Image 1: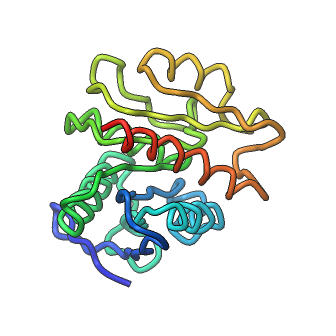
Image 2 (image 1 turned 90 degrees about the horizontal axis):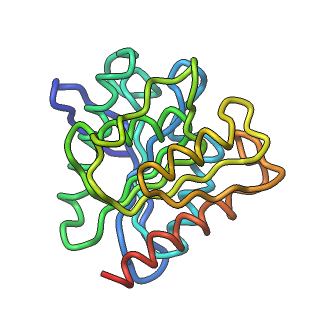
Image 3 (image 1 turned 135 degrees about the vertical axis):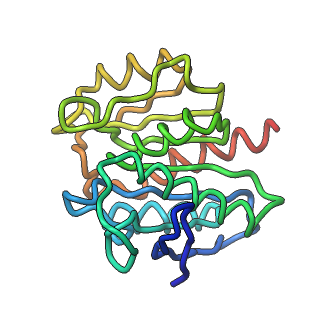
Amino acid sequence: MIGIETSDGLRLEAAWTEAGVSPRGVVVMCHAHPLRGGSMRNPLMRGVTRGLSRSGFHVLRFNFRGVGHSDGAWGGGDPEIDDAAAAVKDAASTYPDLPMAVVGWSFGAVTALRWQARDGSSVQYAGIAPVIGPVSMVLPPVAALAPANRLFVIGDRDQFTPVRAVAEYGKAIGARVEIIHGSDHFFYFRHDRLASLVAAHFSQQTKDA
């Protein structure tokens, strides 16, 4: 385990999983809602991390403030954007010569996108089952996002977000949208499929660059 320092002086628990083959990029993973059991150790987070590692990506997972061994407490959503920013900064400084990407699940998908809007980031992005609705923060306005290679993945049985909402928002920001049939918000037994979709999307962009 390692520690990541935030801009307001907190230390976040984090862990690297190195690429299992010749590295082609670096991915920062943002977990689900801290008050609803989200952590970097959730099965989905671990499963997608393993899959991305096998596909040639170094992966950095971290716990938002107040989760696990991270300092601080839940900040209501905005301070967690700073946590994501700190993780990306740490990853970029660790592997400065590799392409950067961020992946978020649920709350983490929304937080990573809000970070991109706030900081004007155009790094590659994949949002797994972003929560769109009354239990989520508001997604960034389309005009606030810089152009980037973006992907959304949603299950057609998601309990929290209608597929249509993700498809409409994805179209508005120029993101590719993949629907996994038979899956809900947690993608049970489909973590390898998730990782394959994300890795293929990032790898194609790397090849085209």
